[in-house]
Image 1 (cartoon, rainbow, N blue to C red):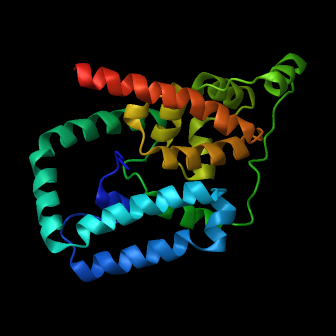
Image 2 (spheres, helix red, strand yellow; image 1 turned 135 degrees about the horizontal axis):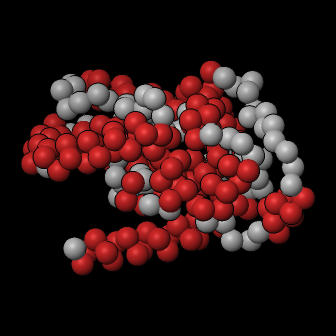
Length: 230
């Protein structure tokens, strides 16, 4: 399974300057957490989605947990240092315009850990003037794009920063979901998890997630073909 997040981010490790004991402990900690009933309750992941998440975690540990593979991986990261630096600069500029301080993008485990700390919070407490036509459109909409999600968020008066603060999802990722920009998002299993939290916060039906992902998967195909051409 491919993911835009590098293996250190998946294991929530700060950099390549970590020893094997630290890598092993972190892997065991995250695996135990993802398999906990609390994580399943908060994340809303299905068994299939959880399996995909664990596959991403195992893939990262397979490489970083082996000293030889880790060394080769570190060399690969170093060779791409200039490209990564340029990407980070672009992302930081975009994030700065969205929220005041989201320069450190937390991994899924960190996000969910914070969410568990606020386990009692289940609603965003939406306050907005209902529009009968808009409410009718929401009830009957069967094709949920990123633009549709943005439309509902703005209709319900939820600023991007507020949604990010509540869900603990980086505002840059929420914006990328609304733009349906797979090149700015991690693996689909993470996107699915983010969507579930956004949909829940905006008090939309769960069917919105599957509807969105159908269009998102098409966008992924277009993005991949464009990348090959370039």
